[in-house]
Image (tube, rainbow, N blue to C red; front, side, top):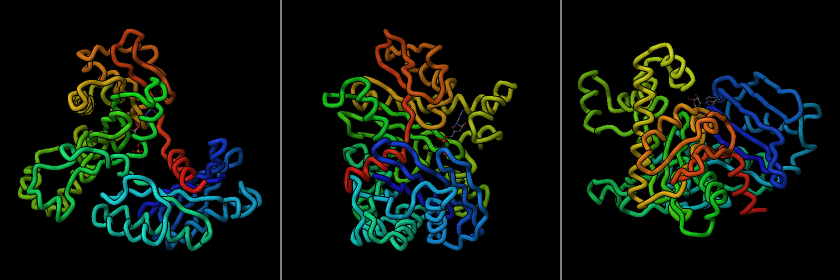
Length: 396
Ligand code: ADP
């Protein structure tokens, strides 16, 4: 089966066409600057990459260019659209309505729309992506895969905030968590590796990328996670502050004469390791600056590892133990210094790291030593493949 995986943002659209039998990527690409001008980058596997500046006034035109490229006699990878058997859409927020992936119907689209309030920048764009694909491929079954769904198993004590209870009842203010597709994919693989797919298990997944979150997974289910009502909570990230005292918002607003929206823009886009270091949100730049003696870059890296270790410790407490820990995403898969800095805090768990194994990047590896009390792994995430698998499970 060929599954077209779509991740639609407000002005962008990422896609992959995946053969679900071999799990190979047939083509992938990106439409950028939708609604502004338009640029398509299309990478058919085994063929030359195509980059085109083309007018994309809306997402429907972007999808139609992608479908044209996929079926193009030269750059194409399929003969015609009948070779697309299903579409899997990444949807950011499913609120409390979706605890798993679903086949998209009119009712499902309405329910996703009802979650718009919770993710005003993302869900409307995701819905536009669905409508664009439906208009061009009306007969093809489509599936919605939610970033929040995996975390719907969290118990109330983990997802409620210490706020008046009516705020939860009336406005659904609670922790939702994100990166669920990645946490689910990586935790399944980790349980497979440690041979605990069906038994009692306690694992912690560290998804460390530009956006970062850590999840406690007990018996295959998310029981707590570091992102909250929005992805701003938890770890210090590339440009996001992570958890701070909420009273700071009012204080900044007063000092800088900012609106709440302006302060939140600072917390989302000008904070994190970029804001602390003044160098970059990219950990490669931070490593280089730190090596050259830049103290703010060093402190930003220290803060990142310290906060991550704090969350891991709190989840060991929440589950009363941990069998294995996995690192994933851009930093988790590639940055051995960050992995080591985090693991250095975890000696009390009996964790010891094989520095040679830890030096490997981007591959599935066990970085803990044979006698480490807790196994530590790198497991590359693959959200597109996870979406394709979910899609096949529902419509295959
Ligand atoms: P996003 O949340 O945008 O998907 P990523 O998971 O790609 O982010 O993570 C981005 C971070 O991962 C950057 O800080 C970058 O330094 C790091 N990273 C990504 N790829 C590599 C690589 N090949 N080598 C070293 N670091 C990398």
